[in-house]
Image (tube, rainbow, N blue to C red):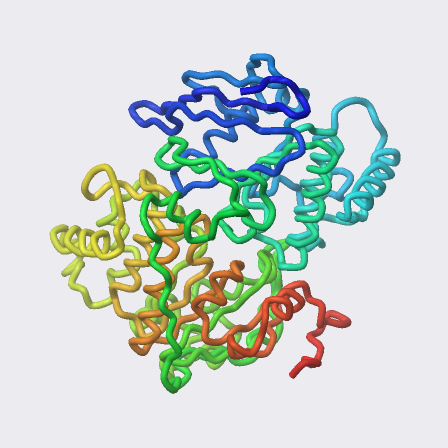
Length: 518
């Protein structure tokens, strides 16, 4: 490996090992990042990507191996030391305070003496220069997710980094916002910065990145030029086998609307929540209907209303299997044949400290499975049911009936989705079904959703992932600022139009405008 700056390596990761007890997260990982390149880091959930970038950024210390920066061996004891070297990171989950302004949030991470007025001028100048315009005095709570990510990126740019690490940066962006981010990243590379780019969206990796290092089970298994690969070949390298494609063949005639929402309006419960505004939607048996939208536009509030975690103003606001359910709780809705999978796996879908068999009870105790009789839990039945779900959905764990919190994110997601699908529900509402899930697990979950719809269920998918939506949906609606668009056949709407609706481009005076393309 060359160790000079410029044409050589800016950062070298040499034989990095990281162990957590008996578990090896990184196993002799070696890679080099050059100035002026965008380098992808790919791998399934649990492959070791997050551990490696945390070591580079100083959040973790390696068990063995070394880092070299511009040819010199270094120790990065903490993120502050990383930033002083010239390493900055934009995390997948933003670290912003809603009640503070843009410039106040940025001030928290900018070193040295300054006053807010001069910093605001710098923010305005740098953000405009890189095509990520910001209003320094805007309150973060009032900003859409795409603009919030700009704050994170600009905050890093003000630190004048040589290396920028980005973790799933387009997961919360519209297609238009993602394209603008690509323009910015390409410009940074042209200016001599290095970008380490983590993403599960393989087509954008092919479009954007010069090289890709692929991890599997903590080890480097390949380094390739993604521009000469296909998405399928990259997925094969990540998984170690061909990833099954989703078969979403055209359905027959749709059945009745097994789930219906009629004029649902709900005021936000939290200070920075989103109010739902006159939402109407029909989800027909035999179809997958998708609600697209950038995070924070009312998806969580909509799910709470549909699941019964929050009751609607009138019983008729939500109809399940012909029954008014707006005033019924979640257990009563389940008894009508409905199933619900929330976005948050740990703490909402599953209790981390409960075993899988115990987590089965959370949603199955009242569904006629005889898991509970005269107040006593039938342990044999719960364990058998958990084992059946695990086998059908390829849930992998180190020991039988493990605690939910010990599973990887992808395996836990397969389990909670499988737990609901095992009931063969008439209605399924699922929020972000494959968030943070690797390609193999995502394909399995998506196929299961399509299969359930084709078996006659009404499936409602709430998702930010347009690849997912266009892969499995029969009909698509878009939620923006708590309002829902009309519903379109999936083959009658394209990504550009969905992106515009996601960004609220067709809204005026806070109310949805008539669809000019209809």
